[in-house]
Length: 138
Image 1 (tube, helix red, strand yellow):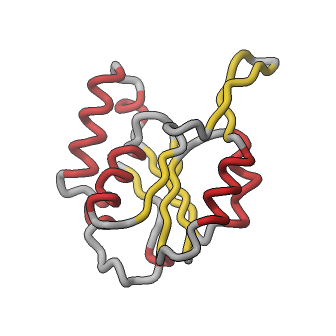
Image 2 (tube, rainbow, N blue to C red):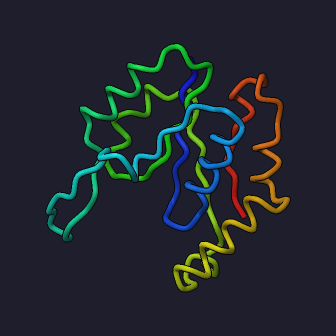
C-alpha cells in the first residue's frame, strides 16, 4: 500500500481534495475529524497535535488498500513523514489566505474543482504511480 499525506495551511483545499478522492473511490482519512487530534497548551498558546497512537494505528491498519490518502496539518506530523510514500503540499496565494474564512473557502473550492492544476492532478489515471503527485498550488 502507498500512503500519501495531503497537507497545507487552512483554506488551501485539503478537505475538498479529500472529498473528491473519496468520490473517486480512494481510501481517505481526514485527521481534522474522528478524534485524530488533541489540543495541548504550549508556550505560544493552544495548538492541535496529532494523537500519535491513532495516526500510527491507521498507517499500520490499512494494508489492503492500493493507496491511502491522509490529510491534516499539525506540528508533530513530521514524526510520521518516513511512513508516507509521498507528501503533497497544497498552497494558496497570500491574498486568498487573508480573505474572510467563508470567501477563502469558496475560492479554494472553485480552484480545486474548477479546472485548476489541483483538478488535473485528481483526474489522473488512478493506476499511475504516486510519484506523479506533486506540490499543487493556486
